[in-house]
Every structure is written in C-alpha cells, then in structure tokens.
Image 1 (cartoon, rainbow, N blue to C red):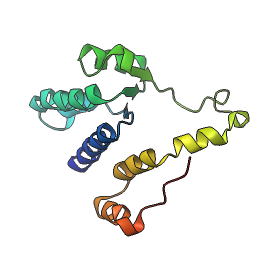
Image 2 (image 1 turned 45 degrees about the vertical axis):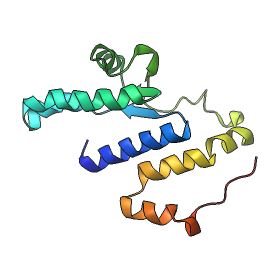
Image 3 (image 1 turned 60 degrees about the vertical axis):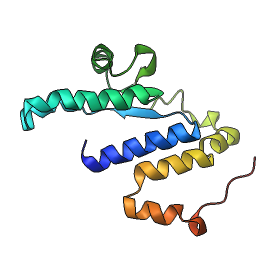
Image 4 (image 1 turned 180 degrees about the vertical axis):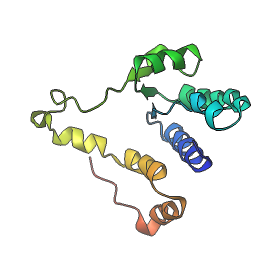
Length: 142
C-alpha cells in the first residue's frame, strides 16, 4: 500500500464513520509476506499495525482465501465475525438478472455511497472539483 492509497482508504474510513455508513474493505495483497522479499523485514511489524488499525475499524473485511482470513484473525487484524471470503469470479446463481430490482438499485446508488466512492476512486485534484458546490450531483428523492 503506497502513501496515496493509505490516504484514500483512511479518508474513506473517516467519511464512512462521519456519515454512519458501513465500511467494507478488501484485503487481497498480503503485504507483510512481500515486505521481507523486497524491502527490510523490520517493516513487517509496522505494516501489521496499519493493517490492524484499518481493518478493525471496518465493518467487514473481504479476503481471497480461508487461509488469509485465518491469518488476519490470528494477527488480531479483524474478528472472525467481520471476515468473509470473497470467492473468485461471479456467482451466476446469486447474481442472475432475474433478481434485478429497481429498489435495490436505488438503495445501492444512494448519495452517501456515491460520495464515499468519490474519495476512494478519484485522484486528489479531481475530488476537489467534484465536491465543489456547483458541481455536486442532485440528491435523489426517496
């Protein structure tokens, strides 16, 4: 995780807490395993501290395997109740088009989630443009 990514994740976490919306994080690159291979092994402990801070604050952490979930739990980065396995690919039974719902679509595109996604996806210079009062999207009516 580079500095810019950390700022984006930390910013998204702060905004999620301020807006009282759930924060879901995905943990798919096991950084502590790569640190000794590419840098100094003394950085493993500080990296685990960052991972623990972020994932303990999240409402849900998605991991790519059972082994990684067990390691995150054993390291105290998250509790077993807040860790879920994110299987590779798309479950075509659960996400079949017959389940399409306008109500769910509206729920998922609610303005708070849109606002949160802006901070996670856009580069810094584009964020200030999008958040300027003249450029904000209209709030959908419910």
